[in-house]
Image (cartoon, rainbow, N blue to C red; front, top):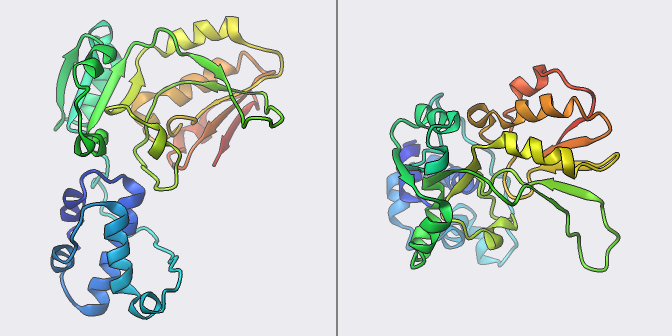
Length: 275
C-alpha cells in the first residue's frame, strides 16, 4: 500500500480525510486484488466528498444500488514509524520573532520545509488576497510563526439566547492538522496556513490582569491543543504557569493522543484534557 502516493494525490486533505480515503482504497484493493494506483485512476475528482462517494459505491455496490445510507467504520491503517501525515512545505516567520526558539524547533522537525521571513502575517495576507480555492485547500502546507499583539483571550460567545457557559478562550494558535470533515473550522477558517504565536510569555503576562476568580479557560477552540505540542512546548509551559493559579481550571481540547509528557507533568489538579 503506497500511502505516500495517496497523500500526494490528495495533498489538500488533512489526517482524518486521508484516513477515510486510504481505508476505502485499502479495502477495495484487498477485496478486488487490484493496486491502489489503479483505484486512484478511476476517481474523477480530487474533491473529498466526490472521491469518498465514488469509493463508497465501489466498496459497497449493493447498498449503493439500493440507495442505503452508508456510514462505515473506517479505522486507521497502521503506518510505519517516521511516515508523517503532516509535512509543511513552507515555514513563514514574522521578522520580530525570527530569532525565536519556536522557529528553530519547526525547522528542526521539518528540514524539508523552506524557511521564509515575512514582515507580518497581516502584510502577507494583504499581498495574497487573490488566493484561489486550490491554494486554500493546501493551507496545511504553510506554517506561520507570529508575534501575537492583541488577541490573547476572549469569553466564549455561546449560542444566542442560551445561558452562558462562562468559559474563556486562551486564544493560542489557529488552524488544525487533522482537518476533520465535520469540524466548524472547515467553514470558519480562512487563514493561509497554521498559525503559532512565538510569544507565549506575553499571554502569561496578559493573563495576570485578565484572570477571574474560579474561572474556566482553555485552548482548542480554533486549533487542536496537543497536535504539535512536542514541537511548540505550549502545553507544558501552560501547566507550569497555571500551577500558580489553583482556582482556575485549564482545559486542553484535543483529538490527539500526543499526551505522553503531559501525563508526567507536575500540576496542581486544575488541568483537564478533554475530547
